[in-house]
Length: 364
Image 1 (spheres, helix red, strand yellow):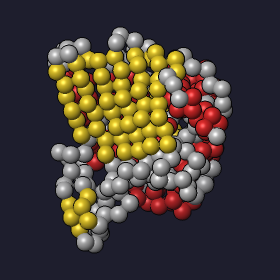
Image 2 (tube, rainbow, N blue to C red):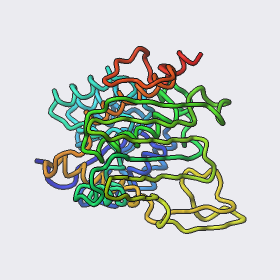
Image 3 (tube, rainbow, N blue to C red):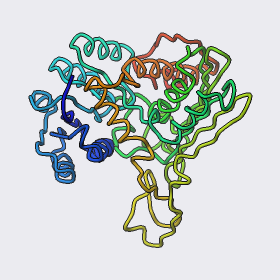
């Protein structure tokens, strides 16, 4: 069992790395950031200065070789998740991997096996398992408040990603469905108690950002589960006005609806758009809805505290590499469904290398 705070190295230096660093700073009794690695030295240095991180590397392999590091968090482009996980596992480091787990099912298998073989944890960073409003909804459902739940809806929408690499399908593996739909699919799977997924149906389109990407910027996906339940997942990279994230849960005896931001936001109007930030909003002029205690409302500090306790052997991991693989397989099937124009059965064996190619190859 690991005693004392888990010493973390962050691979990456942009938006998600900042979320991890800020969240870990909120739980210093459980986890501390000892190093950051990024080929963009200026961004890494700025992140280190912002959170008083003592060591900066420009090569993630140097961070992994650092003997002071117990675990790494991977916030790099999706196509790099596998190689970084394999290197970290070989060095005996636990791995916290941002979603999606990787970009192919073969990579997922290699990551899971490498961590198992080297006796380290592969922790899948799905913060919706820790989002306070959403956790409360599941607690009520598990206690029988809604009777048998038959429908789980989850939507996440904004005007596009923070980093340019997301637009490049070779680095990202997909568009809004892969980037955001992995949250909704994982959430429904978790909320319903991880039942077997039976079928997937999806409609995709590139409606707004065709000048930047071939990938989808709008997606609606329906997943059917064993036990007469289904989910509707809505995702958008084309929604103006900042982030919108919500759930709806329906059972034969009741329902609950949660909007992640409303009730935690300050309706704000500004002619100048300075002095504050509204996540995923391209501008802060006019009306916006900045969220107070934003990271806590998303569940990031709670997630990191749980991961620290899992690494220390105090708790069983709630989100693992196996969960990430289940979600990725459903996403492959969803892209294939959009390309074929009909429902696709699970399990699904990919016919293309990247998830988005299952749609693009058939569409073209």
